[in-house]
Amino acid sequence: MKEIYDLSIEKGIFSAILFNPEVYEDISEILKANDFYLPIHKKIFQAMDRLNQKDEPISEDFIKKEMGSDFDEEAMIEIIASNPITNINPYLKELKSKAIKRNLSKLANQIQKDVQDEKGNDELLDSIQSNLYAISQDSTSNDFKDSKTVTMETLAHIRKMKERGNSLLAGLDTGFMSLNRKTAGFKDGDLVIIAARPAMGKTSFVLNIALKALQRDEGVAIFSLEMPSEQLMLRLLSSHTSIPLQNLNVGNLNDEEWSRLSSASDDLASKTFFIDDYGALNINQLKSKLRKLKGKHPEIKLVIIDYLQLMSGTGNKDRHLEVSEISRSLKMLARELEVPILALSQLNRGLEARADKRPMLSDLRESGAIEQDADLIMFVYRDDIYRYKEEQEKKKEAEKKGQSYETNFEFKEEEDAEIIIGKQRNGPTGFIKLKFQKGLTRFIDPEETQIVYEKAYGSTQHTEAKMNISSPQIQSVTI
Image 1: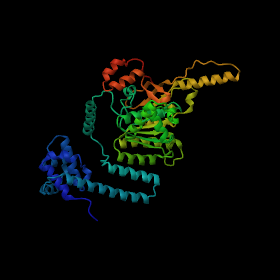
Image 2: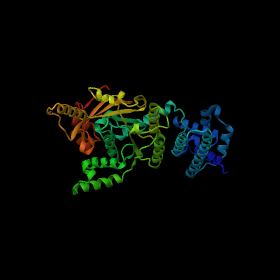
Image 3: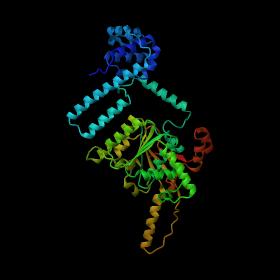
């Protein structure tokens, strides 16, 4: 069997660094300590990395001082005696290739051991897929980060935010200026729960977010356990074209609307957009599909799951434990793939017995686990739905008694809506006010917000001055 390491290349790379320390930066972008075969070579590369972070010379004397008792004089003599590699890139690729093959070989041995241990198929497949994804993404080891590393990474993040020139966003644009002000956008690795009672518009809300991400050429993946892909696309097209959903459903369009539909269809067809509408998905299947998809399409920036309670776990009979497993897995998957995951959730029916039917965290079904794992929990609420139901009930009661009933309720095509932030790990709770256009299944910021948002989104100070954002449009409340 051919050896899956090459000590001469390892020594030649170290010799090249000692001969010209400036090449270390380029090498460290490709190689990590674990890519070296010999343990002493791993330690030497780690010492070089520490010296580079401290802005100290990468030389034999400084390496010896940095390594202390770990320093191996004989190994260093062999490195110095090696010819430094000049055309270094092909050798870096070769060393990287051998490191990946070693990791695959270790994984193969681990799979054989796990099979003999009689692990369950779902658990075994998830473990294999997770490890394969880590290898394909060239993951480094999960060692502790020292304070200097964490500090430097944090400062780099702050500089990155500064360079963006946008004081409003730290994550993915939600598409709603007022929501961006409250959340600073959806951060990579966040698990975002969007919950509501049926018919409140939670699916429409996340589809609006998805559409705006697609219009910014950001990739989106949707797992729809309740609604077929064609229905989701109809809603997206309705929002995109401003053609009522009912008209699209029956094909009742004039020539101008057909033209708009054709243009919008071509636009969406060109985007990085995937829908999985398999209705019997379990958490391990979802993880497997999403890892593969993200591996092929790293441009995916947003994942949506509609909805959490329809997903099954890996066989746990206790539903609360099953939901706990699902929510925890989604949170870990968001961190692993470095994307925000938006998961829709149902609310308990009990809230409808309250006078104020605005949702609270305790209204979440199997709320304990979801509340613990989520970084952000938002509720979609439209008061007109309950007002309409109450008026209908009053009318029925009056008719039973043979009485006429005149209602003051006005049926509107555009209703007030609230997005209530019940939990935000790194920000305030509160709520924002939107408008919901029922015929178009579309949420929008209030009219003046929408106009400014579309014309001058990047200028936060100008927007605030023009809109007087201190007005009651955005209010803070304790949920």
